[in-house]
Image (tube, rainbow, N blue to C red; front, top):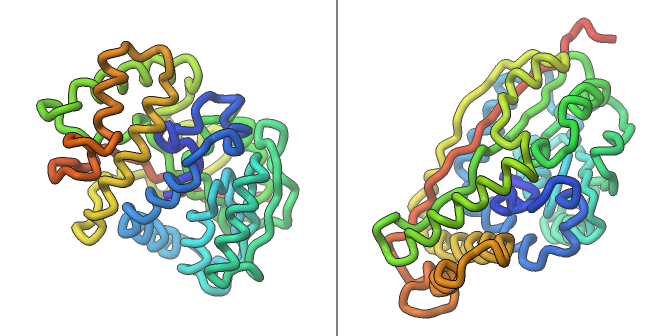
Length: 296
């Protein structure tokens, strides 16, 4: 899931609202984290693609990815919809460069164009698309309602907008296990920071979509339960996420908690990459909305 972004502090891991759209180039390891996220949640993402295909009123041939990050969302959509082309939008030139390099490796270069843009300023002007995709990007915007209203002019009448959002970061370490209490405390600190820096995270996105002219046709939770086949990746995913979480909190963490979190990722005996009790706990929300067929 594109998951795009500072989806933990990547998903929000886009760390702070206005800077988030611009911080990709200042975020070492973010690209690797986004790629790991996509690998861990392949099955859930495939189910989202099937939902889009079920609701589409015509073949999906044009896609607009808002906050594309490393392009994992774009690539997944293009692989599911083999006749489609996509415009990938991100504020970071570095992320778009990474995206284009990966697209070449996957043989998708001829089906992707990129736009560097700050979505708080405007949604890029493109020919009306069949599908817009926004994964973990809307809650970083200063005024997501304005963006959603403007986005309706970039989607053809009857076309779809798929939104993936989250209200909290994933958890990995059982509370009673080594490092669990420290992880719980850092999540409490992050939640307090989010209330100030990312106030729309966890919004009633269905309500926001409806009041900006969209008709919501799918609204469901996606439980983050990775398939057994990706279990070797989960430790690396947890380590990347916890490292970013620790660094995002900086001096707000006490010395003991910082040390405990460090022990989870420093290669020692409690490192999450060496343990068999690490599990992903969390939830995201999928909303698929349609632009009215009567709009002109």
